[in-house]
Length: 399
Ligand code: NI
Image 1 (cartoon, rainbow, N blue to C red):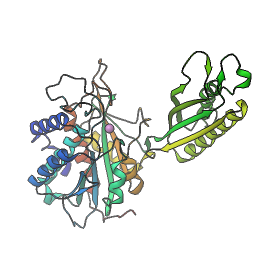
Image 2 (cartoon, helix red, strand yellow):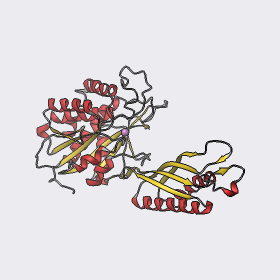
Image 3 (cartoon, rainbow, N blue to C red):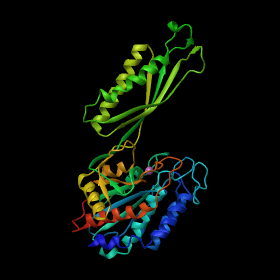
Image 4 (cartoon, helix red, strand yellow):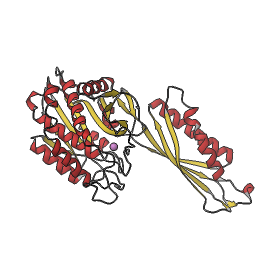
């Protein structure tokens, strides 16, 4: 059985992969600047005789069996770090101030390098092609790398695509996956309430943007609770409210910033419609103008049913203790969504939370990727490859 043969080699490079993971951690690079990381991956791919090319500037696309008539399965890892400090005292802590691998993409990269090595050892036995996508710029600091890679055609000839993320919010030893939405569509809103400022003792000649803004904060909470039915889901959070500067002046404007998260297109449209109605209505009620500047983030990440089931099967067969849908969808967003819009795919989570401990989550300054997950991630990815290429159906090319 192919999966068992692949799994038998998972530990072969484990010490080296842990070393590579920590080296990448020590030298974090932001989105579209992953030059050193890219070179490291390229060296590794050369060692295992891959055909590869750069993509999206600092990413790489590697084919195990280019031109193979069987189906092509794509696996994706993200390469970038975050513009935030490292607060650990690890021997391999970031050497760059204000840059750190606080989402575990160093680990995701090591997992994919491990997968590359194992697959190369069985190249002739693989009844198809495996395309490894080393993607820059997932964090969206300067736009998402996945979209650029899709535009560059990395999914041409690909039947299905898979990706993963470590997640300390889920217990270590678990894999979380489900069909349908697993991560949110995000919109960031910047609302400006423009009134008329004046002396604090004379509100009657002013149009107070603070009172209007305060009503907005409360009214916006009804967008989801009264705008969507019990089968819908979403979040509207006002995260920043800025107005005024002293005790005796009514200011002329207030600014509110926050996030909207939704999990289905119909809900997104409904929420945005209600959001605008609340802004306009509140503006009319207080005689102020309300302007909306809306930034559109990554789309909903939807798992195809077949692909999600393949991940669950592979994880179970690989010996993962708990394979569950619990906790999904997450309200975070992920640009793997662009791949999953073009071909069927599945995105899954490797639990990283240590029982009885408050394991720092992704994007926390104390976070570090758990090296035990390198082997787990490799086993699931390799199991998926074996599962999906079993019987080697003819290649499907989803446009
Ligand atoms: Ni991440």
